Image (tube, rainbow, N blue to C red; front, side, top):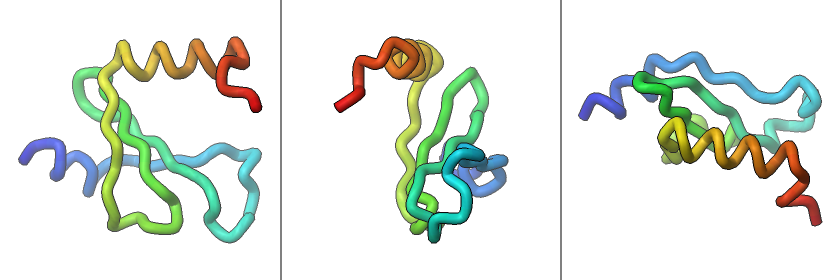
Length: 70
């Protein structure tokens, strides 16, 4: 599957604010077609969620507006 190949070769990154907290955060990677993959930094060989460009844009917009604040 093409997405599986992309996930293996993707350039993953995590927020600088996460610092060195033992890996307790998520990582994101850009994929083809504007898609974005998200994975658990503690389980780098585990599953990843893949979002379309519009889904990722809606999530980022919600984060910027504080819609997910507890």
